[in-house]
Image (cartoon, rainbow, N blue to C red; front, side):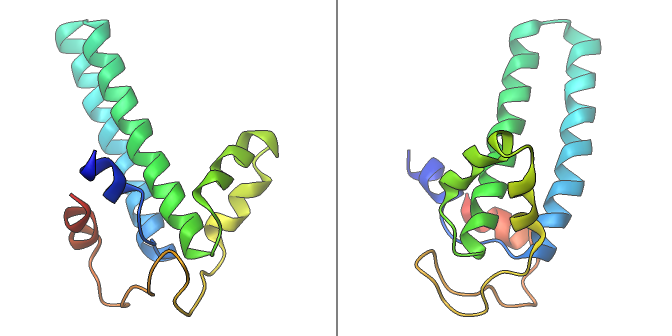
Length: 117
């Protein structure tokens, strides 16, 4: 439970969000296709898919936190026809907000991911 709570806590700046998004989607797609080809086991495929979605949702929630919005704004993405996605690519708040302080610009993406685990 502690790890799950940490995955959704804090902020993620725009640059690291884009890097994480463009790296994680192809990686999970490759893993999922390898699982499907090698095992043809639906349970493992579903597990990998759920794991990917969980990771992506945590990215979206932390990105909303960077703009000062609640993570529950993720619910508005399908309801608004994707208009809420605009907030994910806008510049975040430059000052500390209730979700944490501003990330230093020199932080590396993998450091941010490994720090959450």
